[in-house]
Amino acid sequence: MTTTVIKTIATVIYIVICVALVIVVLMQEGKTSGLGAVSGAADSYWTKNKGRSAEGILVKITRVLAILFVLLSLVLCTDWLG
Image 1 (cartoon, rainbow, N blue to C red):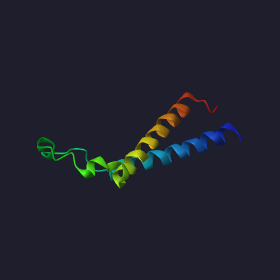
Image 2: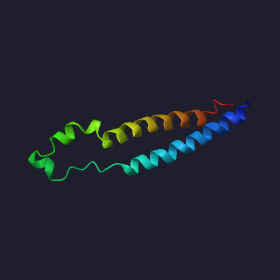
Image 3: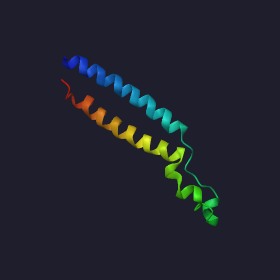
Image 4: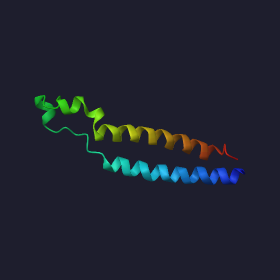
């Protein structure tokens, strides 16, 4: 494969990661706890086991996509592919 083909494939993957990152971030709930944090109601069973829920999975996916986004940005920006 030539470097042009590899760079094109990397760019397409980069665009897919960008769109996926936007979608995953928009699917997440807000992080504000409101007045419940003042009374101590924020420390519940739900908040302790949030990592196993759908929200926790979205947070993990966001982290992975963000890391891939930064790495591909560096690769495409520094012209390591030729």
